[in-house]
Amino acid sequence: MKNFLSNYLAESSAQEKKTKYPGPVIMISRECGCSAKPIAIKLAKILSGYSYRAENSTNVEWKWVSKEIIEEAAMELEMDPGQIKNVFLSEVKTQLHEVTTAFSVEKIYEADDQAVIDTVRDVILRIAEVGNFIIVGRAASSIARDVSQKLSIRLQAPLDWRINRIMQVSNMTKSDAQEYVLEIDRQRDLFVEHVNGRKMNNCDFDLIFNYATMQDDYIVDAVINIMKNKRMIVSHENE
Image (cartoon, rainbow, N blue to C red; front, side, top):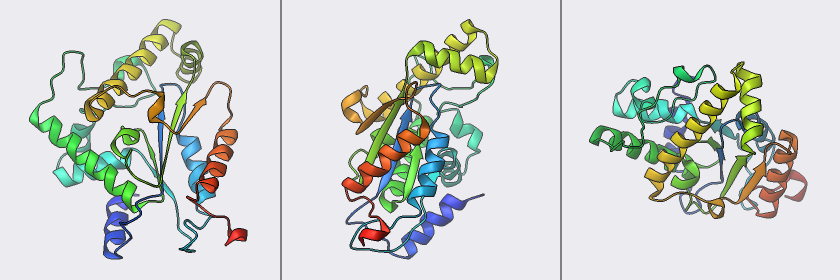
């Protein structure tokens, strides 16, 4: 839906949505080969059926975003989204040579790159503060780590499992799939390290799931139960 994120954030601001208790928000980080999208979609549907915060029994719709963050940042910078994606990793699921990226080991960020990063960081923080969003990737776990009502999730799996999965979904050879997985992981790590000021480790996440052994529904159920226990959401029957 074109510009839905911009419109949603504007409406929330016009309604003077609370700032004292930012969130709730879920951030999902993932290694290459671990699919966050189906989990985000299921979480958004289930969470939309709950009322968030006991003191505010208003039903709200949860949304999940990923590429929309890039589109919003591009609009604010008056740039083409493709230029924004040159700073972030272009997440393609085809052959490795089609992956576009502005990163390299020797990369030193230019002023324009930093402006993009700062704008994307600002968009993510606004989304997190408004709440009722699931943010996939974009270093959100690092950028919005200080939001009080948040749950930061990491999806990971053994390298061999991820290589085999990429081979299955993209018809790559094993060598190409391995190169692809390692490169995507490297690019994501480089960006996260840049915006975070350091490499992230397991202590930076609230939950870590082994995607090779956990089905999507198991992960969703676990997240919902933890959010209930943390009072990020309350069930209708308990209101």
